[in-house]
Amino acid sequence: MLQKIAVLSTDSTGWTKEVNLISYNDKKPVLDIRKWSPKGKMSRGITLKAEELEALQEVLATLQIEQGEINYGYGN
Image 1: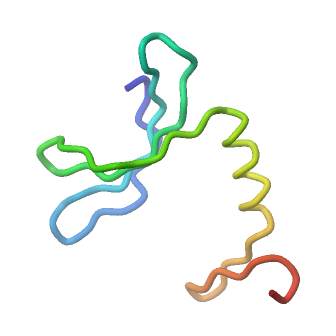
Image 2: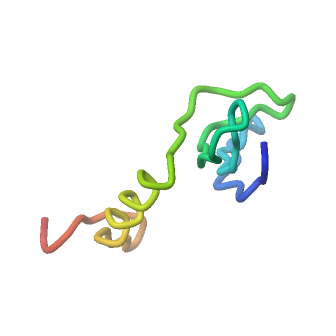
């Protein structure tokens, strides 16, 4: 792990959903999102390369979040 970026949430059992910057085998860093147990056990997650993260940023910019609801685009 190169850098711990954020803890998005913690559930009632102590598992945290984290965003971290990691690198496998000295390759380019990727963004990693997954759950971690209080004892350091990790669950399945997702990794995003820089290009994928840019695409995700574009998608997230189109979302509207109001009162806990997620809405996409223009009236969809």
